[in-house]
Length: 112
Image (cartoon, rainbow, N blue to C red; front, side):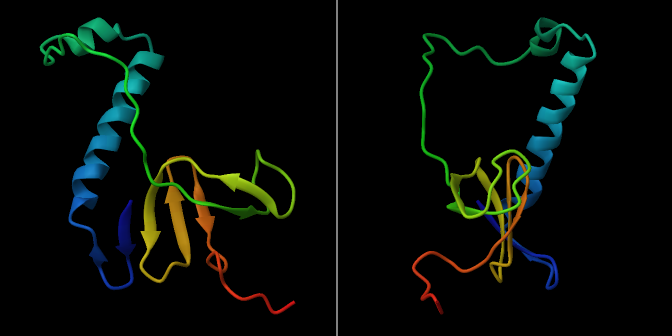
């Protein structure tokens, strides 16, 4: 997750590096979608020997969603995809899939 504040020009120093990595990934995926041979794209890439598939935790958000285009309903409990950006003022977040407008943080007192 990278903190981001466009109004003040402040952002995590990793922002540029992560942006470039995601652009490169999207570009490679587009090439494959358009018929490029992935073996050709991987030519000259490092070799990973004795590899295994592993998993590691990544930050995400969980909360009550309303207006989600796929996970429909109001107040539906969801977990998001990987959390990529969060506004410094916590008004919005960008996950790997989409933007979210952020309401009250968990644990906030209810006025009901």
